[in-house]
Image (cartoon, rainbow, N blue to C red; front, side, top):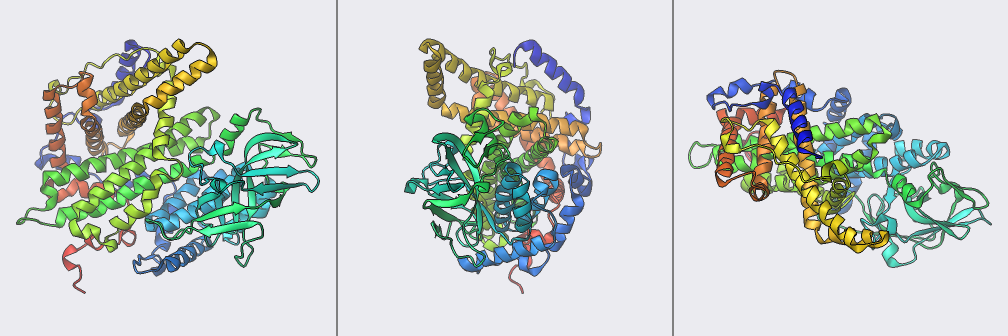
Length: 640
């Protein structure tokens, strides 16, 4: 945010974009909530723009009894069931590994549907098709594609992705596994030099994996060339582990027990020269190394770039988990009375837990949609923005899902603790996502780094917006005011952290010393960095939500405008300490904000929760996927 003039100009543009209906200046009364009525099917089509027929076909196929929940399975039976389910899916040819590059929206849509049914199946498919197959597609060449992709499509080869090591999780550049080229035999020698270098948490490897993509430090002609990816066969067709490889099954976990995670060691394993995925780096028979990418750091960025699609899918999985949990909890809350005839959804404590989460789910769904559009467009100029946005949304969606599912479980009382009602098993299975495909804390730090490097954001202290909450017209806060406040928070945090880093660097003197001093300040303020990551993410979601409201069908704008305002107001309430400290909010403003939120909750929960139920219906979750008995007729539970 370079100046107050720029801020004023952007606010003027935003204000012109938002229609009066989109801004929802006045909150309808409970009786007037009908003015916000809409068609759930129309909303569903608007929320998800792509591959409607594919999604419908996958969901229809998932009616097969093999996909129904069974909480009585042993560990090994659950793994076998997950494999058999996946075999049935690939038999339908809904999608191909080649769609990873050729049609990414189709690829992602199919995998998302699997996760709605069972997260173990979704993750096993994701590891096989996205991490293994996608990496081969992106980093390999025709010889790899022709030899491997057809076999991955049929599960003739079951694949995995060997990046993480016992001693190296987020620090992929520091992995210790080596691949040394032997020109005499035209082979790479893959080796695990220490136990800390063993590959660990490798999904699909503990029991079923036949091939894996191994990330290792490449050496040739005595020179280190950085991290590269290799295709390595680890088991034969009879699932016998091959020589010079050791695999340990990691056993039962907190959740996701349909996935067979393993730990791998390589003992001077020889693999052919063609095992190197060589689209961006080649090793000639004599060991000569060539690459169109000049530096090790730049090559590393390309090599690990395939994680972006995985992060998009994990982020979407977080959003979809919230959709399912909230649909179950809100359906139950709207029909379950307590202390007389009063449904529990009528209690404010229920509304404060479930309805901001519903607005957050819509905001994150729309942000994920925008991210997918950027990925599909594939513009080189968007590469950094895609990395930053996918990192931030993955962290925000999965952290939000953890808290949302816990609230859903509590709002369903003891019935939420029952596995057949789905919320508990989902919470356990999906919990891994907060550290899977990038630790969330590290992801938010990456977002923060991008913010402090953005000169437009940090050149000067931002001008505070002239917004006084308690002086605005009654009802949900206007979207332009919410955008302005959330923009200010992001800019203020970014400018403050950048200024401290710059001051330390200037005092240090010398480029190397300055870089170390700036890094030390960043490390000393990691709490601020994570807060900045959240602020940037929520600012993006708010801006994007507001823009989407303005572009939506006229019949959808009123209720979407209300939801967007609830999203923004709940962000302000959650971080009221910042806005109070920045003198953008007084105690009276904070109380006024609370009243506005409660009035909005009353509208969403009026008429036995009619609007909230329709907003859940708009997620398009088929009954055979939802399954939870309390989401239907709770009174009949156990009757038959």
